[in-house]
Length: 280
Ligand code: KMH
Ligand code: ZN
Image (cartoon, rainbow, N blue to C red; front, side, top):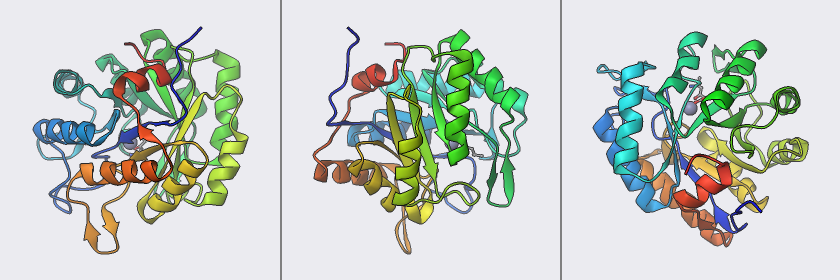
């Protein structure tokens, strides 16, 4: 029988950088490889088991540069035990072919967004044929996707994808509900419950992240419904009104403390590999 992870184990994923915030606006955002590695180590010590990675160039701008992605995966593997998840979402300006090439860097996991969504004033483009190409490539390369659902319609798209192409590499299906993006589903308990109830039967685990102010509502709702958590400066830049996040590990510590109240303890990276079905 397949190994399982006990229900009290909480997967905390940290998304430390993202593609939306500029270094000029937020100097504490980890944008260099050195900063990313130190951040990842601090977050692992605080209880994170996976890191969701966006990288930047020498001018701190989002990039999908192949060489840098390779170097980043290697550095995170060398200096942390975290499950390494590369973003295939990139920034709203990245072309689809560059987003497919992210898998060349052979991460443990990759994000895979289940449909196009308005994203503030921009459009985060995920046409169906692209979703199918990226999914099939992830199966071929044995990279475990984390399905990012920004909207209820993305739940139906996931069901269609799994029905058409079968299960991911590793046989697990892990979903992250990304809530509170202007253009996506709202970051509310009601929306979370609706999305969780609609998930296809094939889903084996799910987590949620609330953007901006919705971070606490979504985190608490996810815990009370037995889900996992993603936190980090990609998603929220303040601890409370007017109090900036100084280090990503503060958000991980808060997620772990919230989990402890719900009698959940942070999952180890080894457990996360079992949960997600990534390569050992
Ligand atoms: N930066 C957003 C446009 C992902 O990482 O896959 C997309 C995003 C999702 O952050
Ligand atoms: Zn991302």
